Amino acid sequence: MSQTSKHLLHFEGGNALSNFRTQALLQKLQAVSPRITGIHARHVHWVWSETPLANEVEQLDKLEALLRYGEPYAGALDGTLIVVAPRLTSRITAACRSSASSASPSTG
Image (cartoon, rainbow, N blue to C red; front, side):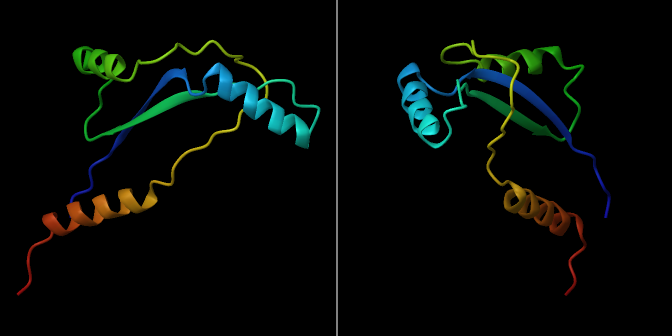
């Protein structure tokens, strides 16, 4: 079975919370810990590709255009970073199994 490397890029997106949701969440968090003084959230998009896209300017421009939407992120860049991400292992495992089974000769 041949092993091909995968390539992972990230694109920072816009605000993930509206002002209304930010204020509502901040109040709830401050009820738990008054030390919390602010909250900011932004989208971060991860792109997993079969080939490196670093030299593919046209493809990178298209991806950036597709992933740039909503209000631009205007929050803080310092402070404690907490990342919330979906668990992708089952999808990745299924994709690897699928490509491995299509690359393996059939026994029969």
